[in-house]
Length: 116
Length: 114
Image (cartoon, rainbow over all chains, first blue to last red; front, side, top):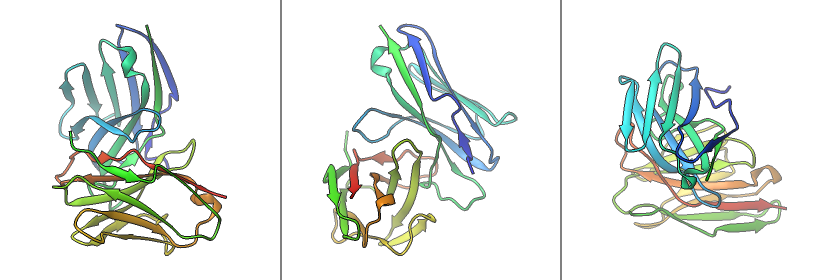
């Protein structure tokens, strides 16, 4: 049961342009959503999160938008830099599956390539 | 920034053998976790640990798995009798436990069961 879906396995963007990574979820009871970035041979690194009571959170070049009615969130990176090239995971916590805050449900990830 | 450290980075074992994966969480964190990622698949939650006991575990975390905090710094995952399907990258993570707070992940241990 894929509660968190990232339907695009890869995305290629030109340096300086906007990268938009998308994530859909099915469980309306999730209360936090998080984005993690992962480089090869490293663990996931937290990027940004958003509470389900908000619709936008911004941190520097990274902005996450949450559309609860559509059960959709997106991560915008602007401007994109070559160092942003990594796999980006969407994750959710809370919900009626009984998960605690540390029990994150991850999507499959989207591999972002930012070309110079 | 403080780090979660995991050892070894790679572990090769024969099917049926016991393995212990080791982690040193961030020192002021109270919640500890193990996740795994089978090649090409999602990162999956295995278990969370708080106050010296398991607070939650997934269906993956069966009787072959156990966790322990043997001293004030280490957090271990033991697989008693490894199977081929246990081959995966295992990530340890820790947090202070605040709702919605980020987890800090280690770099992982790549376990290969032959």
